[in-house]
Image 1 (spheres, rainbow, N blue to C red):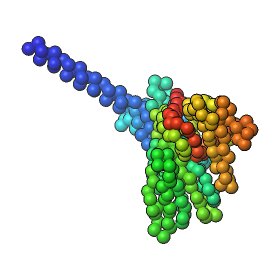
Image 2 (image 1 turned 180 degrees about the vertical axis):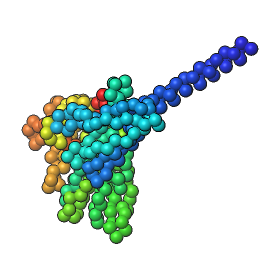
Image 3 (image 1 turned 120 degrees about the vertical axis):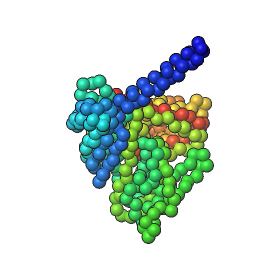
Image 4 (image 1 turned 180 degrees about the horizontal axis):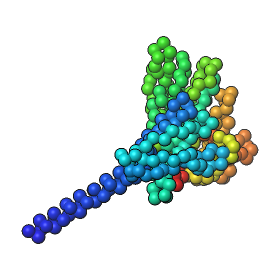
Length: 308
């Protein structure tokens, strides 16, 4: 009898904990979706406690500060929709909190709607995995994307054919991954990358040899530019622990950036100093700009910038 009571109490405790977790989850202020339309408008859907008045904030790209966009009240169903826009029609990261400061959103939404010029370019995806159709959103005939595998050290190539109205391969671009893109037309095209994120926290493996990666989420380090990261001996943008040093190797790491004429500028790290063509240098990475990282050994890249 005593054993049955104890077991019964244990079941009740488990049930109570489960109900509490479910209740807390239901009461959490969060974004449930975000949609970018016409490369400028943003529709955000929020959920949380019923009748909660929420303040929506957008990150200012030029000074790296969050600015109030407006308020929205969650309905009796605990949901609401808020309409905003990308800054300058290109960039936008959003978070929310209750006006009484009792709730802070557990995630955020971000988007970058950039440009694909004629010729060669490398474009990265800082958000969760997305298909090439949702990434290169204005394909033209013979637009070609090269996806690098650091495991096989080879490309997978996808080409868009206007006669078929489709890509011959449907690539998936993972978080922090970049595509080498060839635009054979004379038109500048658009690309779109967006997604929900709990914090600006990313972990990925840099494998021995070459890796085609991109900059992390929203941190900006240079005012009034799109530049967001400066590589030094142990950090990316001052917040991202890019493991650039590899002790015991002449080149501890190498970074290569694609130039407008399709050539590369390469920076080598030796004795904790970046050099290009023998001259000390600073490496600047732009928003969603892809670049090559050469590592002598496997390493883990960790990025962490709190949402609040």
